[in-house]
Length: 232
View: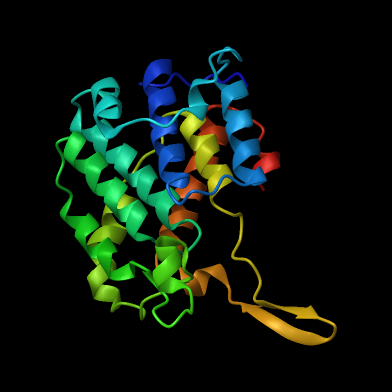
């Protein structure tokens, strides 16, 4: 997809950036059809040779840091998008937290705001009958909603990200749903089998995700002069 806006990042940096985000998205071991479509779209978007298929490869934090360089603003913006990927589904797991920590260390950054993200960390369900046997695969339980003041530093930090690259803007628009999903019950043979609450109730940082998505849409429409109808 052609864009009139010029990115401050090289194609190699953006490729490594997206590989880092996808490595985080896959660290729970899942690779569903939606993720497969997303990576196919990104590969096409970056005009990457099909034989290379570089986005399909995970990336180590050290390699990522080497390619992104030593600009702290670039590193911070990467970490902001990494947090976006980690919390987009309302579940922040231990494996995601560990990888975020490794990213921060490799980039030589200590973001104090990230410490407050630990208050949203989900834990395996202790009373699940197979919890000990299946470990990280056990159902995760969200912690009690932290006091809003605890997350203020993280919210301010996430709100401080500006969008400067078309590929990253499209990635954000695809990762964050356009609206809070409706609360609903799933029924089988007339009986309720599961209740799905609205994402905005699951995710205390939902407003930050929506704000970032809005800035990405504005960037694509106003600066890149792109048709954003597919994201709305």
